[in-house]
Every structure is written in C-alpha cells, then in structure tokens.
Image (cartoon, rainbow, N blue to C red; front, side, top):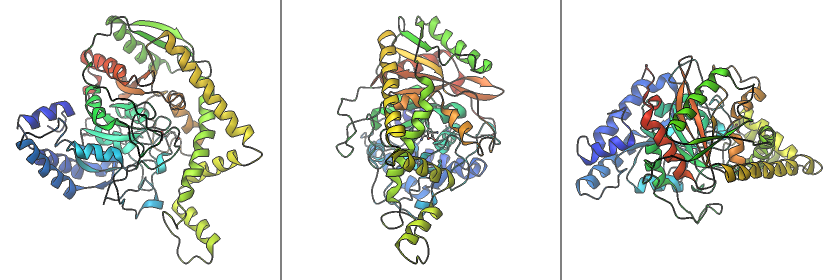
Length: 483
Ligand code: GLN
C-alpha cells in the first residue's frame, strides 16, 4: 500500500480494503524506520495523525467521506498548523507554535486528510538544494550524497521515499518544480492567486504560490480540487471559479500546439538533458500534438530580475522577526538596538541575511530606481514574452532543471551557481503562470523532469497533458531502491 497513488489509496479506503488508521500507521512506521537517512521531516505528528485517521474512518463508515478522506499528507513547514510547531526551517521560529491553520491546511483538514507531519525546507524558502535549513540538509532518496532540490526539499523527498503519498510545497522561483524534478516525482505550481497564501509564511509575496507534490498528475488534480479557491483573507487570491481538475485528464491532446523556446534549447543545454526532453516531446507528437519553435527573448534577464525583486520583498516581509513581534529573542539585551541586532543575527542563517542585505540595498533611496524599478520593468518584459507566446501555442515545454541532482556541498560556497539551478523555473513566477514538472527519464541513474508551462489559469490543460504522458510512459512509477 505504501507505494500506491492517492487515487489508488482513495479507492482502497472506499472499498474498505484498508482503514485510514492502518494506512496512517504504515506511513508513520516508514518515517520512523527510514527518515533518519534523509531528514525530510522537521516534526512528525504521530498522535494528531492517528486521531485524524480515527475520525476519517468514522466518516468513511457512515458514507460521508470525501474522496481524499483518510489519506495521509505532509505539509511544508512554511504552512501554519494550529497547535503544531511551524518553523519555516529557521532557528528564528524554532519555538513557534501556530495559533491557527493556513487556509490550505484548513481545506485539506475539511476534506478529512490526515497530516503526518511538517517537512524540512530551506530557511524561509530561500534556496535550491535544501541545504539552508536550520534543521540540517535533506538528502535525495535516489542518492544520499546528493541534494533533493529546494526549497521544498523535505516535501519532495518525503513523497519520493513514500513517507506520504502527497505533500504541499511553495514555489517562489522554482521550489516545487525543481525538487520534484530532482526527486523523480510530479509537482505543480498553480497560477499566482489560485491558491490562498493566508497562513503561508511570506518570502516574496508577489511571487510565492502554494502547490503540490505527488507521484502522478492525476493525484495533483485530485488534491488541487481541494487546495484551490478564492480566500477573502488573502487580498491577492483570485475570485475565479475552481474547475474540476480531474474531469478532463483523459481528453485527447490531438492538435494541441507545444511551444519549444529556442532560448531553452541553446548549445548550453546539457546534451543528455536535451535528449531526455526531445524524447518526451516526441511522445506528445505521437499523440497528435504539434511542435513549434517559439522565442522568449528576455529569458536571460529572469534570474537577475528575480534576485532583486525576491530579496527586496523578503527584506520587508522578514522585518517582523525582530524578537519582539515574532521570533527568537537574544539573551539579556542591553538596549533596544542590541535586542534587534543580536536577535536577528542569531535567529537568521547566512543565506537569509544575504538576501535581507541585498533587498535592503536595492530598495534604499538612491538605488531604488537603478535596481528595484529596473527589475520590475524587466518583469513586465518577461510577462509580455509569455503573453505573445501563448497567442501562438497552447503549452510551453522544456527542461525543469539544467541537469540532475548535484552533490551536497557542491554549490554552497558559490551562491551564483546555486541561483543558476533555477534558470528554467524563475521566469514562470515572474509572469505568475502555472507550471508543472513530471518525471521524464534518468541521467546517470538520477531522475530528471519535463516542465510544462501553461497560460494563466490553464492548470486543467497542464494536468491533462501530464496525465496523457503518464498513461504511455512509466518514468513516474520508478521508486528509489533504498526505500
Ligand atoms: N531557489 C530560489 C530562491 O532561492 C527559489 C526558491 C523558492 O521558490 N522558494 O529564491
């Protein structure tokens, strides 16, 4: 049962082939037995999970169950969970117990899902390798010497190692798609505003978006049906009806136009990676889709623009962690300035401090026009590129990452090379578009992903296209040997 998909587990629970208590016990036992190898959880909520499972079984017995009732899920430790420690991967929040649930946590609770724990992550979601966590790095279940990707590395590794059939994540510049690709699972980042950010600890508010990890696109659809929706408590949440994300999964894709950006398939793209993507795209051609070269001329500006905008927003969002309103407080401060200074330098890790400094600089008077304003203008150019592209094609495809998972420690001393791991994902956040990553092959025994980028609110089509691919390939069915 532990390697089954959410859809399969839902049927097993409805048919009474297994109870939620049995299923939850099974996953908790797997976490206990194996997680010491990969460190994917910060908190395991055994007792709470078993109580929720008992309630779920009662609902199932009386026929009041939702299709997701009784299914275990793990939440990235960036989502506030009532009565449960919520750290955001930081020493700053090491002793924080949230007094309320994030909207998405509420949604999954209301559907009767069982929370097995809170997953490890890069501190405040800043990172691409999950090496910036106060709770130590997460390791890739496919190779324990490698990173699982970040910042939602714990959530991705937990699903890859079958500690839970699904998990939540957040994606500000790639943090769902990139770890999904490096950990060999499926992950979706919805359109900005599709999923509520209420109770999701803010990194860069104009880019942050909650999303999901699971083994299949079908599972992502089942979960998104519950996760998506307008929330009056998040002023950037969009009031658009939520479609049924699973109703059209099987729809034929004949005639759909796939755009291949020439900027992605340039001579710098690793030849093994190019071969994987070429094979994947051919599969779509076989099913009747057509391929078109397109151009996203401002792609190269995405990383520099992001690394002004995201730090600028974070420098403002993280101001609240001052040891007074929120967060770690230093011992015996001599005065207010000492309290702020020491609380913040003790509570935040190196990368977070680097970002706050860059952001504060970019927003300071005299530099604002040259840096922040410029980056905001570039963001418009990038948005326009996609807008033009979606007049010509229905979906854009390319690699999710430049290559497979890299070794732990390999990029920690070189922030720029770390930042470049998100070269294919970041523009999508700047343009507020939905995108997903699905397993598309292996390079040197390590999984790699195919990225599908859609037009605004076109998650239905992305899931349909990903599902069709998973119906005729079996990359998503591979499971790391040690787990
Ligand atoms: N790797 C990017 C960063 O460090 C993106 C992180 C994210 O999506 N949360 O900012």
